Image (cartoon, rainbow, N blue to C red; front, side):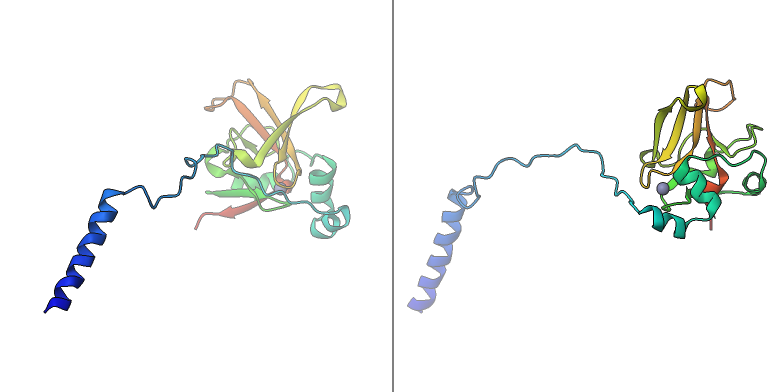
Length: 175
Ligand SMILES: [Zn+2]
């Protein structure tokens, strides 16, 4: 009987002690620091040889040599016939545009008024051909996609026209 009683006492003492000093067991570490950095983009870097083996000659010319497909080509006809879905980068499969943001600009190239995944799309000033334009590139593989024009008066929420080479895109229809 005595033995049982002393065991209960020990347990009680332990509970009281830990209750008296709640912070004693906590390490005196610094407050947690929140990092506000934007999510890192995992870049796709390939050698010229690898790109040549992965892409068709036309894709290579546009994505890696900043080429432009001819207007009203085969890919443009396909683009106009495509329904709901997502457009991925032809070089690295990064998500770029959505059918929700496509519109018919009658310019002969696939047109979007906004990227679906803005962090995967970067723009640069382009002064080649003696004209000041804004180039659109894939942020992941640095592939050339096309150009973006602003303030043309299209009846879209952004008044922007992402004029994109169809060859640079991979369309995946919604399920
Ligand atoms: Zn890409």
